[in-house]
Amino acid sequence: MLAEMKLFHPELVICLLQKQACFIGGILLCALIGLFIAWRPIQIVKFKEDIQYLHQLKAEMIEINSRFNIEKASLSRLERIEKKAKQEFGFIDPQENQIIDFSKISSFHTLQ
Image 1 (cartoon, rainbow, N blue to C red):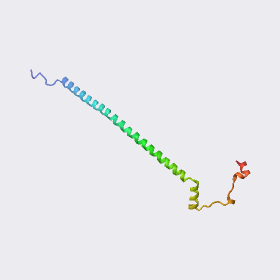
Image 2: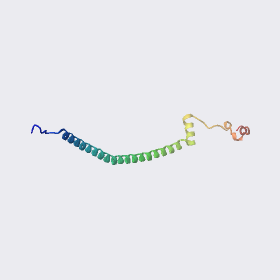
Image 3: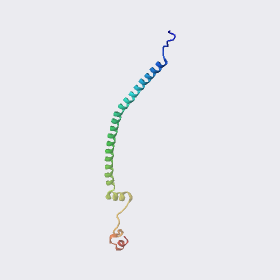
Image 4: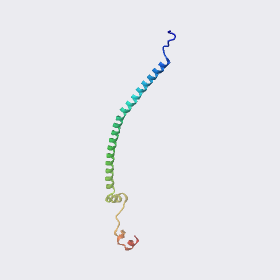
């Protein structure tokens, strides 16, 4: 009678393996869901930090642009350009007979 009795029935082994596979699959699924749930708030915090950094960078760029505009305005002043032209390039003011006032020439108005 003991010889006829099998210690492991194949159906019982298959059923136990299926239950173990389902249990392990369930644990893995729960772990993945847990990781996703934990990952989202971390990403939200990271995105908020990135946005704050970009706002700060934008403010710095606006400040730099403002300084460049002020420098551009000071560099393009006519007096400064005239002084630089005279000192560095040897330009001189024109004499009275070298100046032509086109607004006083009547033929110039007809050409326009």
